[in-house]
Image 1 (tube, rainbow, N blue to C red):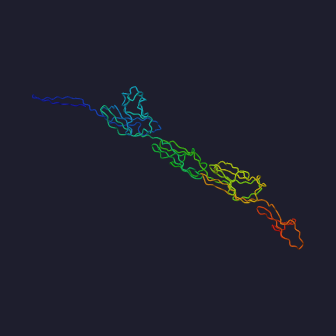
Image 2: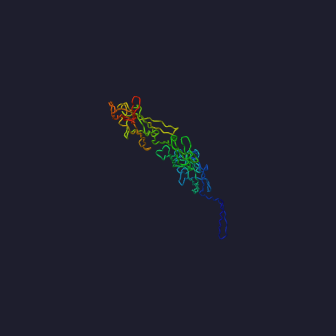
Image 3: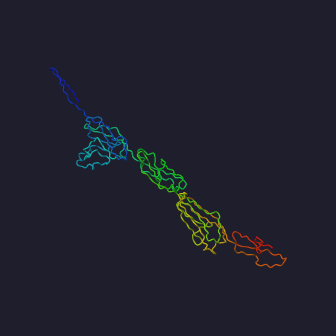
Amino acid sequence: MLEIITAWQKNEVGQAVSTSSYNLEVLYPPSSELRIEPAGPVSEEDNVNVTLHCDVVEGNPLELTRVSWFLNGDLIRELPDPQCHELIGVEYEEMVTEELLVNEGDSASLCDVDPTELMLHEVSRELQGNYTCVGSNIAGEGGSSEPEELIVHYLPGEAVLLQNEEYPMKGSSTIMTCLVEERGNPEAREFLWMQGETILEEKSENLTLNELGLASQENISCSAVNDIGSGESDTIQLEVFAPPNFIENLPEEKSFLSNDENLSLMCQAECFPLCTISWLKNDEIITDGEAFSIEESVIPEDFDTNTFPSVLSRLSWNLKNLPDNKLDHNELNFTISCQVDENDIGLAISSTSHITVEYAPENVEISASFLEVEEGEVVEPILCSADASPEASFVWKFGDEIVSEDSLLEF
């Protein structure tokens, strides 16, 4: 800038005018604006480097001697380092206390840098926010730039999968909830559900599975999804339980021939976890021993019929260990029950059969084995009796001719 200075001098003789010109330069602190390169959101998954530029808008001189960098109002770096005069000869890596902030170039110290540029190395979500810069020149420190926002997109966080029912039951439904505390940026509003290798249609955080059965027992996984991709999933192996249920129960009524060598009853109960079948006679527990044998086997699940594993139990009578190798004829009626006790999965179940013991007539007797009568004499009737189950029928014969079908023979 050129300045002309005119001086007027005056005495008794007269006056004189003196004119001189000078170059007058006015120095003042800079005003700056911040620029982010590349512009726009960046993805954490791309591991990109972002460069911040502090551009001078005006000031004299225009060259910046120092720049202070701020993130959300907090000072994160001053360039050159304020302690440069003490750092001569110190290795670069020792002076970089924040690994995410690296100046451009391979300078051996933080002193030999361009203060108007700050590189953010492999940008992550921790570095998103509003950045400002304050530039200084030899005239002093200028004002802060307008904030510029660095937007970092990142995946949603780890999912936690919750199963609302402790014991999902066969034939029922269950609800699963996918909890994700960190929804990512942009915020995840959909969820990816998988059953085994199959992607399910459900997109909300709650999944309902209906008509649970054997085929439902697969890995269920979920994760939150945003524009960047899917977050870390969580997986649960869905286990379906089957409450006790008879596949084969006892007949309501059953007749046994007392000397039949193959007397047995059988019960089969579906249950998962596997259960135990107990046998009772007249409501008293039967044990495997001299009078009875109990055999139990496990029948595998059947996917075709959606039948869970089951327990098959057979109760057999050991007639060879009983008196006369037959059932007691003094006990012609009794009950046999098979039952499964109550557990965490379901209520107790029981099946009962009313047993009738049958045997052929025995101990056949007549009230008189010899009769002597005179002609015209009235003869007392003769009674035929026998033990039998069911009750015996009687036939009286004279030679080959049937003369009566009643227990009492009258003349």
